[in-house]
Image (tube, rainbow, N blue to C red; front, side, top):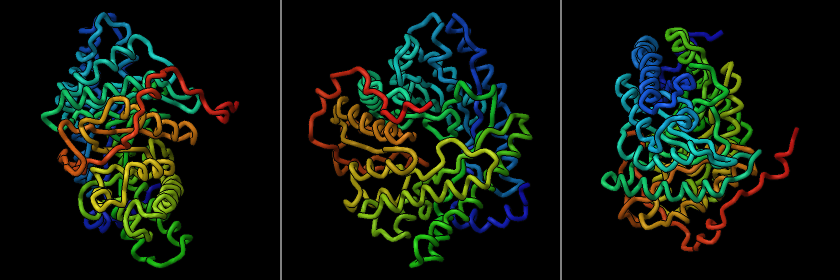
Length: 452
């Protein structure tokens, strides 16, 4: 049982260390919205979301007031639209993105995820239509998020889809050039995507999930950093134990919020995602934790080892605090959303190559990275392929959320606002990957995938 007094003892963490519930996300299945008419299907999608999520924001705000726990976002994830729209009479799936956006505005949620396709082994006609609709969908809606899973450890990497997503990201940036390519902030390319991720922009409601479910994402980089300051200079054994104990307390608070939301909404509790998700706010940085552990700046030698220990200790501590842990659960390292990461890029210690190495040991991947606007679609696709390979070989989720800023050059800074923060434009390799991407086909699954 959760001891409320112990939960309320975390007030110091909430008030002074940026502890919050980052999101309560309601997952909604849309499989009963299928129709051969696009208009009927879109109407059913709108109706179901607005009915199921009608009280989501109000309940979240009630929990905030009653328990003093900040809940930053209230969100919805839905079944991958490519699976729902495949039987309809249209080639243009923007109509479904518009229905999602209207539903998000009606319910008052921050974002809605699930304009998605799963193409790790191949693409159906519905997948192709959805992927081709992504740039316009993200350019013409405000709250819709999109994701495409292009690889799994079991299937390998679909290089045709990798090639396509490089072009999609470029076009999305071009269509949202007035906002510095902001549409790309709402688009994630995955390897080994999970079905119960509550975090945007990559959330979707998997086919193995119930009709409706509540998933919660917690966050507390500032809490971990403060706890580690008390054991400065102590051996790594002590550091890891401190992180575990702190992660337990943070996750316990998430469990309380999840159970309360589940009870009040009459919707099953799914999982708590115990990820350390930073923000641009001072003191809410994963990079600051790494510096507290002992590296002078994120990207310095030792960073990957420190991050590996942090990620592992967070999972060990958090898994004991919740009956169901899921989602991505670990340490996020988005550049634009982490003041310490931004500082490390600006001082030259953190590069794209070092970030790639760091993604081998944390959640999730190359996230919120701004690159020059003239970066080619093939180079972006090759970056996706490299990151997917890390996920496939290591049996973990990896992802790419990259923004080729129209007109932007290395040294510029682009401001996306709010929790998305601002990002220094980072250089990419000057090598050419055109012939590599042109091959297409599939990179086969690794030998260790053959486990039965």
